Length: 186
Image (tube, rainbow, N blue to C red; front, side, top):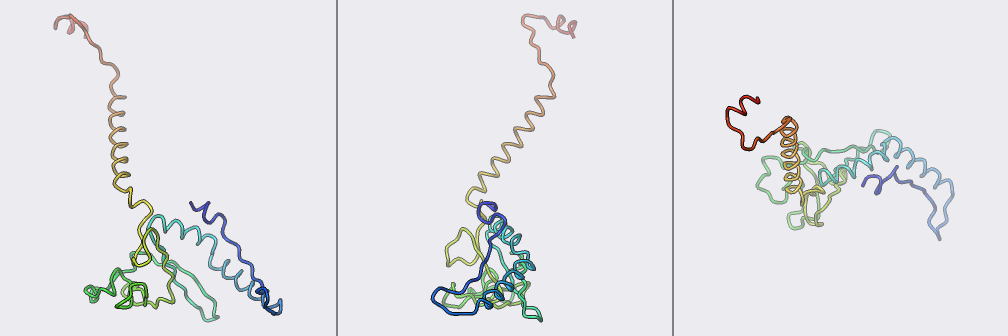
């Protein structure tokens, strides 16, 4: 899926919009900023990891930090770092570690990262396999998780039986032989 969706990464090209006048130098300077962002944030690798996290965890959280030079840095937030603090456990608008508007679950105000509220403008939350009004995503294999566990158990049991069968060298049947005759054979 990573190769299909992202491959080696997307490329970005700045241009002046059609019908707009602007000096070409603006497009060149903008391209430099984008190129620096891609390199310094390892954006191509990060895109691949986003797909991996969406499949595995059902969501990916990106946090944006602006440094003293005004440059934006991107870092992942682990899904288990996003949780509702104990003192807000009974507040529905703060469920699943996501603070929303009290009357609108789709209006996100912030994320509780290690019990600290981080403004929604600093976090990009990508969710998979859920509807728009669901706060957290679901891993890709959630619907078939039980079947995968059963298949794993079956393979384990089959390998144990095969191991037992391979340990037995020979089973011999003696028809019409007496007990003393078999003991003599042994």
